[in-house]
Amino acid sequence: MSIKRYESNGAVRRARKVRARVKASRRLRLSIFRSARHVYAQIIDDANGTTLAAASSLDEAVKNGGNKVGAEAVGKLIAERAIKAGVEVVAFDRGSFAYHGRVQALAEGARAGGLKF
Image (cartoon, rainbow, N blue to C red; front, side, top):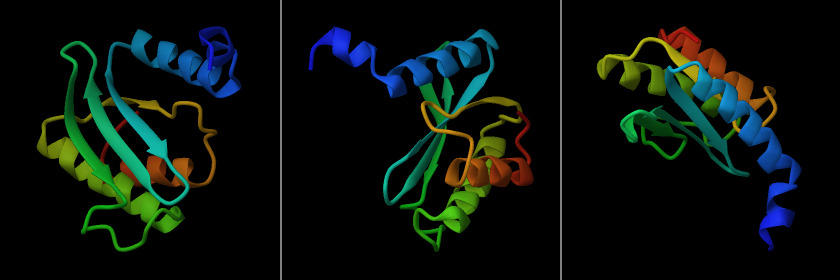
């Protein structure tokens, strides 16, 4: 795939716009990814280029897989791990995904777990 074709891809453009707004806030970033079966979340420090906490629906603590219930459990788990790492305020980076369904459930779970964004 040529670079021009890749950059004109709608998902890439959406993710780039969302990420630019998130990075402008100068906060730690709660980045999410959802595949067809699973949901992943990470707390990223862009200044140092490090991942402070991570959780996914593959973790043993999460009973349900990549459905909405599992996504909410992943949100609570990432909030628990973030607070343990000393992080309370983050910016939500949804990437190219719409704030709907599993993405929304993960965000609500993270808020219920104590993260602020």
